[in-house]
Image (cartoon, rainbow, N blue to C red; front, side):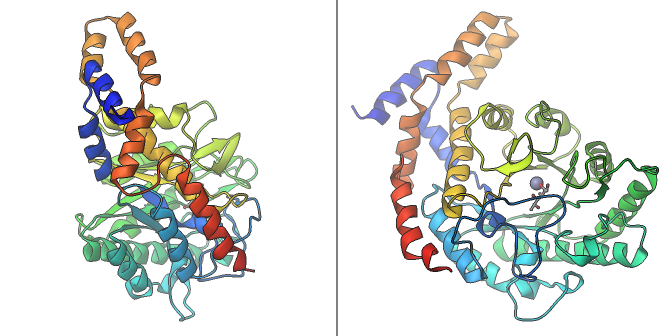
Length: 414
Ligand code: RNT
Ligand code: ZN
């Protein structure tokens, strides 16, 4: 018996079907954030520093400098990640020679991405980029009291949605267009209300245009604080939760955007009672919204359990959001994405129906026994088998490939 066959039988005894779990896992497209590949720089404004209270620390060599390099790096990563996925783009990753500002982006500036996505069987997601720009320097964008600034960002977001719809139509897969703005202030403000009123007005203007809901899903992402917005963030959780529920857009929950002991896993089952779909930014906050590479920790597992146990996979868009510039960036994608998949696999291997019954029966002893026993079940053997069937290396086999790629490609980028 192979290791996998043994695992299959052991899971069968518990009531789980490993074949079905692998089939389900193969269908899940993770939205992989392109910005891990170049430390959130993008291509429109190469000389500008990252701003908006987020930071990519480290200077590991080999960051992508062009759309070609970024695509090449992502292809390498995807060759080491089982399954077919999506790429999450920011507007600043436009591939064009034109000197355009963000209020002039059009679908054609992203044509090469669509072409590539078609060739690679990838989906695309999109984000307006309301940071790293002189019009964001005041700390306020969509909530700015300066009408010329506010309307600039409204126009950018309106156009971003059209790019999203274009992606969705071209690829036959719904694109999630997610709005996050850094707006807030370092010190305690006097007026918390007016900026929120303006943000609400801006969103109303942005979403006024009806787009094809099969092609584009709008999402809004809240935050607790950022560097430089420690005392006040306009787009708080309550703000966007209220806005989203009232206006039928999706909430984006970023794992790094809450109090350090607050978790997003416990929010999913509430929010999805009141809205149809949601977006996750799976990230790893270390002391703050540090956007470390996702590891297979308890919260990642809990997120996967919540999605799978409640049958929410069709309604939840799983996106990754991390940017670590201190390690090989291709490896960061591979590690983070594979971890997300491992957590989902472990959830898919759980005999959930039986365990829910134990809970209903009040048999909390058995519930605890199952939960703990599952941690020691041979899910790794199923993971290895999944990788084998998907023609990607299992175990650490991918690391040698990343090292070789670093030698042959990344090191030559001076
Ligand atoms: C920032 C948000 C946002 C960004 C990306 C680059 O705190 O998490 O999602 O990380 O859009
Ligand atoms: Zn995020």
